[in-house]
Image 1 (cartoon, rainbow, N blue to C red):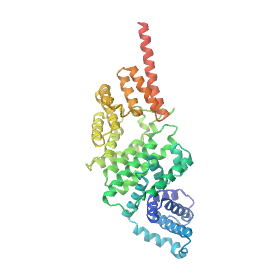
Image 2 (cartoon, rainbow, N blue to C red; image 1 turned 45 degrees about the vertical axis):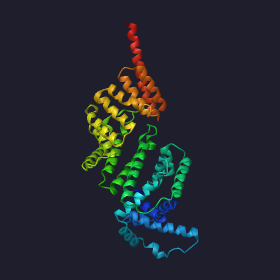
Image 3 (cartoon, rainbow, N blue to C red; image 1 turned 90 degrees about the vertical axis):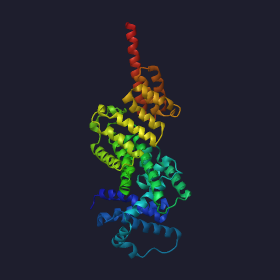
Image 4 (cartoon, rainbow, N blue to C red; image 1 turned 135 degrees about the vertical axis):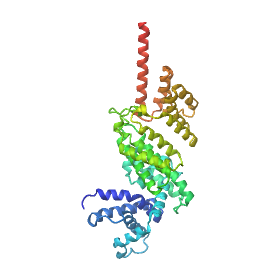
Length: 424
């Protein structure tokens, strides 16, 4: 075999299991990563000739563990290397280790690895960077490009995060049932953060940051394989799929933002939507609603509408009301106000968001929505003030350009009114 594509896929798929097991052996992120990289180099040398092993993860764990032990012994100048026959007969060793590393063992290793990466002492950006490096295997260059920072700066960020994890003395033991539940929630939140880092972008940055969305979806699917009956993980995976399905239609050919109701729905990924909708339906049948499921159900209503006017805004408002009860937040209320504007009009929505202004004084979307509602009510000067504030708070050039489009409309409408008054 000379095609290395299958090797890359096998290594990528096996990485979380292998890294999790190696971390358990060595209790050090750098040592585990070095051992895994060495195992990958040996795989690239041996697999094209000998063919794929029965269990790539078990092979990488066994070879990586031996490599790591070898490195420790060399550094410590202690015992001699193991006998050749102990490390060369990979077939029998692979069978033995594969039998011992069952699904539950893998699950605990992976969950431990993910949890260590989302340690609460780390800032969110460092959590994401470490997870993408350690769990996903993205290069420092790829991560730096996605975060729009220099490679050396990202290297320092990851190094600091690893050092903080080491200093914190994170336990490596298998988590109990209560800890597993707590860790699962933390890991799900980290995966969601990774997705949002990729999703919150403009068209110029999209090619660099799209891999973050794709990696978040891959990690969510991994969690779903580990926790197949957990409805919130189904909801999380569905939410990411339904959101990412709209990616090809989110920007026009000039790089400007296209609002959901104006998007060309034929560009949406039907495959992702179908997978997401199936997961939403499966999750809701458990009758254990959670925040990710509710958000996925909202995204599903948008996905099911063939045309914008088919959107069930009444149901969306009810779902946002439920989400408000689960996770009270001014941002959730702001999103609910969008549905209220569709159902009961802009005046009702404006009354709902006005009490939020102090808490959302630094939030771009608040002033964007406020300006839009004021514009619908014909209060042009107030709308202009809100839009100016939104531009000052814009996170991307595309967001600022979208608001300027509304200001241009106001100016045209004002000019038209002035012309009409002069004519009278």
